[in-house]
Length: 432
Image 1: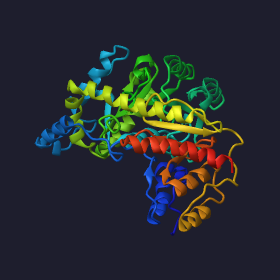
Image 2 (image 1 turned 90 degrees about the vertical axis):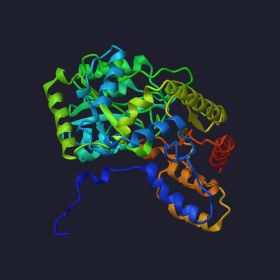
Image 3 (image 1 turned 90 degrees about the horizontal axis):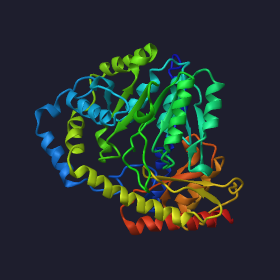
Image 4 (image 1 turned 60 degrees about the vertical axis):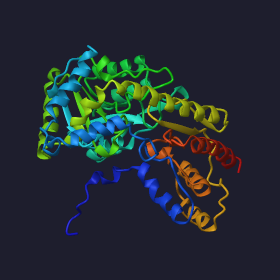
């Protein structure tokens, strides 16, 4: 090219969740059936959408309004409905004007970080959900700032680590929180969430909280919404229907903005998000129109109760199988539908292998395991020997060696085979 057209931050875009697919597809081409544990798509893993939800969608499709543009911020009736739901909790008051719809949370994340001043940084968790960490890093043309989630303490944020990094990095203007958490499955207790809000208030920061899994909780845990504890601190809650209905293909998410009237700079920043959204005209109309009808249906609460019970059973089965494996650290998943497994320090080496029966697959795996992280090496050998496709933990902006799997497999026999095979292969790999 006449000039370099590549943005400096382009090297910060990483999404191992989908990048592992290319490797798995090669293995699949060579004849091995792949068990896809890399991506959190309930529908792709066999979950059936209730007939009554489909009926609501069908009825809405018959309304000509569902084919039209919506207002820039989103359908008025839907935003009023969401604002009323938040206000019922009584902790913070918002109006429909504090709600902005996007084409999925990926779109929202891109806007929220991309419209920050380049020198203004957000600090997020490690392990990170890479859409957050990569988008924030790309806007700044620099690696992300991160605070530690501690696998030895239920994957809770290390508050002291967060506080010190905020204190000594004056470019940090905000804190990213994901609760319930992807990729760890942790649900933060009230005390932790309050501490994060306290740090934000002390250092005059705002908070962005990804709460897309807020209603997917179990094992007697409670998810604390940001709106319950934000008080007068400026903040943004990110929500959507991708995981909850579930309807990931709708690409429908929104942000709730708290306390924009408390800080003129924050208010101007939010206005820049609205102005940018205006250039796109609007977000998809149909799913927005469906939201109040589904959530207000009396069957919705019971549907989630039963759904969460299924995730609880899978989470507890996986934990019970893996907890006594000496070479790893594993925590019981209490929210979302992921489990992260960490290898203890010094367990992995670049000499370890798993037996791969198919010669073509063996040659392929051995060819791509040179000069990769130790956990990615395990993931590749696991894939080549069993067809199980998980995501290496180092792909989540983490220094920890491990992997993430999902709790989405609807075939009970296959799910239990997957977990038991993981245990078997971890033990086999770590003794070689």
